[in-house]
Length: 518
Image 1 (tube, helix red, strand yellow):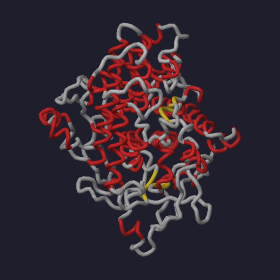
Image 2: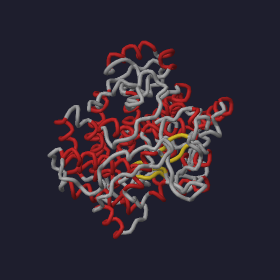
Image 3: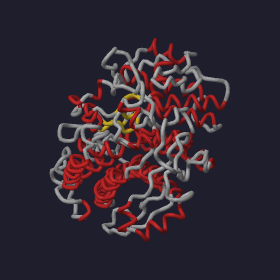
């Protein structure tokens, strides 16, 4: 992060990135889509596949500049996968940099979704399987967007206008379930051997059975998300998802193709030097003797051991002005995310392991999830560890471990972050904590989903940030949402004013979104 945080360099870099995104000249297989999608030029049958590929890549913020702005500088820190060592990265102290956040919004509403909307409209009556896949992707990109802000433009988004009304998050969620109903029904009725978009589908290459499993798992994710605010609807949707068939093996994992022209943004960022393993990660991974530690992170440079750092350190603590400052003998991200693998290391969309943890929580709730909470929890662990190359003997040892999180040994002498083992408990609330903790570990490096689940469940237990520079969010609390961007107040003010009553409070970072009630 610190290598691009000079504001002039940073702004110029992002301006170039956005120009590339909007012109579609900087991403894989998009050569035929060379106009700003907000102009709504017509797609042809030959350009639809390229447009869908573009919408996939942009929808997950794959580009390194947007990946940094939509993920790494905010939610990756707030989920405490990482902490910053760059004093200029104030979001680690809960400062919302609206000048950075703006680009996430711009990428979504000026490029990713308008492009996808064109694809949906162009395939509505001509290619039902392709249309269904595009609608599933619509749900995927919108669920993270609404989870960032709460109310957002949804029903009328992508209409080419500047003044677009916001929809309540509750209404968005209920509509997303309906969209999934339509899409899954169409995919189930389709010839399963057809390949919508072919290799231009960067995730499953048009594999309809895998898209069905992905859609059902996405439904399961959304169901658990609303489980504390609408338990009856959550149960209905979760049981529907499991009955229809969710992801069950690592062969079902949703991973997005990358290339030199459309790289993995996290890989390209790793040598920039601004983020390191968080102390929360260190406490859990070390205490559990977790075999994923050397996969997720690299040894610190001075002693080849693994060292994390607390989130929210002050400028003086980071620069060494504070006596015994944090130093720089800390663990960067793991070798799979090195810069030289940016064209081959696929982007994470969704792992099958998550489906097991979601089902485990549903089973704790008393829902029909097809197995016991314990069996589902343990299978989720098996899939996650196996995904990263851990052998079966080590996996079974880990599942039965009674080891507890460890004190990270940071310069603040922090105690262990929590006191739960991996081995499944007989206590219901401890089970919830264990399921959420193992899911958090398994979701890595998807900070968007991790931050949402920490807000929803209150787990895993994380260290409070050391310092908060946000007057609305005390250091002892979790930042709850992004506030609406300044550009919307300036150019779409009436819609924003109408959206304010849809919030659970003022437009501030400590106002929870609709489903965040625990």
